[in-house]
Image (cartoon, rainbow, N blue to C red; front, side, top):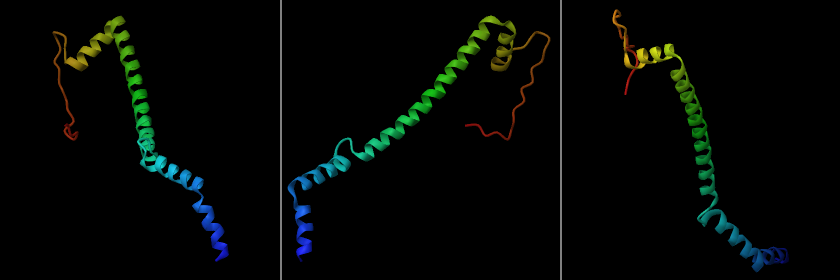
Length: 103
């Protein structure tokens, strides 16, 4: 029984008990607990990935815009592909893939 009294005194120490309660409170019950921090970190990673994707798309769009401003062949290609425009002596046939499911 004497062996357990030293163990009991160690865990009854008011400073150790205060530190343990403080750590439990901070880790699980605080507004910025561990789980919340984990979720915020995952969300930040998703947002950074999304940011990189959109920056890449902006760069591609700027490149297309400069190409459209400078080259008439690119303008013609864009008009034919996006708006199905044609020359006076041409016929346009639009072929669609029936296996593709569209929403």
